Length: 285
Image (cartoon, rainbow, N blue to C red):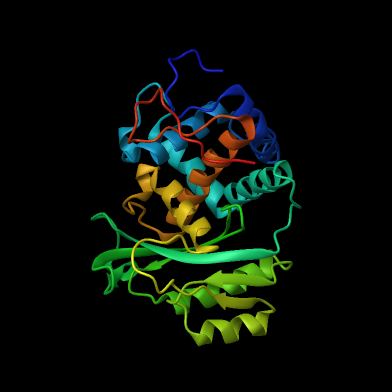
């Protein structure tokens, strides 16, 4: 454990125990003749990634008592490219599901999307305008299980319709979560998504808005909307700063890994609306 003063985003010993085996095995698999000695502690690398995820700072602005930002980003990129981040995320998701009394493999999903503005470093070719939300940027399309845990993430230009990306989400679910047999969506997904779901073995049901006036919690829909709220507690996701869409997708995985590891250890994520000493309950069994 580092001797420096801890940041609120740092891993506790209990949370690191959940993550460490996966990353230690990753490093061990890359040792061999001619391999340079590893200088930086993997726990500190993860702490640095979570610091960026929670605070939203630029990589180059990482504090000096964390590893160099070039090194941290190199690990971030490598773990994204070889699937390590997603594997770690999926491992934690399975443990949360088991802890809640459910099977590791989900059988139902809820789809939704969220448009966010982009920073000036994002290429024009990877962003667009969401005419409905009046936002120029990217759109985060997600699928969650009934607990609100991420099953799939697709990042597109904000101009991409929910129905178009919804087909990609269903394809991903059919490939990586073959036990999912039903998916709930809102009215933004058209009949083409329903037909595509039938082709890949997923029954798509549209949850209609309640006709009464005023605010109403929609069945099933509130779960995925809560997850989008969880993600927005991580400032790096409030605006899309990632030059590459796949790196933006990975940042969502790190945000959920942060949330799930805290849920498993009985910790809670501080919100920016309250004093750091106050906590919100993010997950209830």
